[in-house]
Image 1 (cartoon, rainbow, N blue to C red):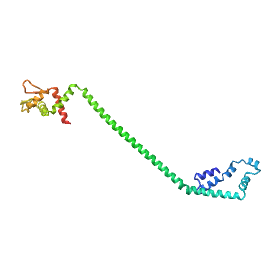
Image 2 (spheres, helix red, strand yellow):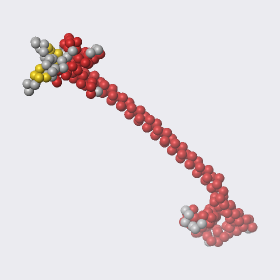
Image 3 (tube, helix red, strand yellow):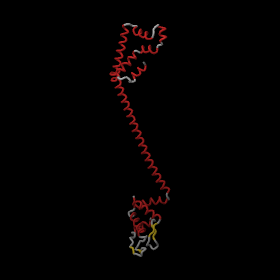
Image 4 (cartoon, rainbow, N blue to C red):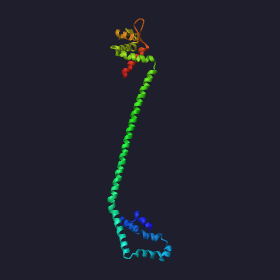
Length: 245
């Protein structure tokens, strides 16, 4: 009997109407089910001098016409509850409940999206901070590298910047570089390795004086050739670096 009841509510019967109706009919006859299943016949016979079947019949008919009214009421109540469960309750409760579930679900999804956006924003901010830290560390490394250099180079960097600000500073370096590396340092006309006569470009006297007074060149004793000092080589190197930039 209990298995039948379970089958009704688990949807194993063919139609929802029949299973719901029969299920409630069994529930409303729970007293009869209890008598039929759980009452010991020997105990019942000892108390009532009736067999279980006889006792159930007498139980159903003990109130006479009212027994019929009660039985009909049970059937009508089973029909009414079935109707409410199948047609009315889903509209009043299930639909609202489902809407509420959807509203909660969408709210949770919205909260999740907001939290993910906040997380992404924090991660983006963290990445920017890391990049800024890297740039700061890079600048520190560069400054340390400068400090680790020979102190004279740091001084020459400053002097080079000032030299390049002079009206003929860049021109003087360019002329000296050409004389040293293109014309073997010769200030005046000379013969090359093939004994060919070469007309030297030379260096304007003002530019030569500027380079000499700033310690960039050495002038031969005859005054016809130039050579670079270490400082001069450093200035020419810096000039070429500026050209590449």
